[in-house]
Length: 214
Ligand code: SAH
Ligand code: MG
Image 1 (cartoon, rainbow, N blue to C red):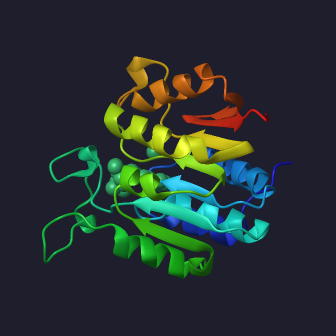
Image 2 (cartoon, protein in one colour):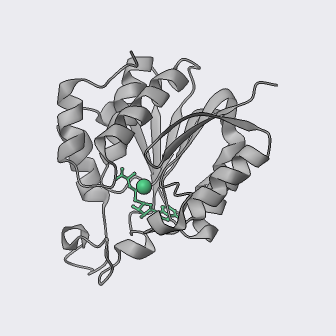
């Protein structure tokens, strides 16, 4: 059986705001435990309110590594006021712009996982340009435009260590299923076509790829 998060963490995951169903969360957790064996950090792009971060953090704790999570916390295109995925509770009342950082910090604190996570607040490509550390797992769940999804793949993909995992969310091969577009699907195809990654598993719209060992 694949490793599963504790019932407390699973309950916190289900209670957290966000965009990941339980079956995909369990697959992400299992991937993070597998990747944790490499002893390298696990990195997520797309923190939002910390729903998926909880699972990476719990897996990082179990593996003795650190989880990193990247987000500017100002929301993706489809999460802005007036759009389908907008949640008015994520708006900073003083500035009138989205700010998911406070909700994220509450999520982590309540679950007792603050010590296992480093939050990187800023634009993913900017942070990636400064990066220089191999990663056990990269989880791409940020912006869904081609510009953002491609930027995340190009910026972070190279840091997946040999034997490490590249996990991509919102992969919709069938355009009928698409609600946030097919950019993550195109990135998934590109990763496979590069020859650097092979598919390990698929759960819902979550794809787990493994870097081929040189
Ligand atoms: N993983 C979350 C959902 C992430 S939603 C969950 O499980 O619920 C996507 C997030 O990506 C949003 O919070 C948005 O602010 C962030 N984002 C989009 N484009 C980004 C970019 N270029 N740099 C940093 N964060 C970005
Ligand atoms: Mg997603």
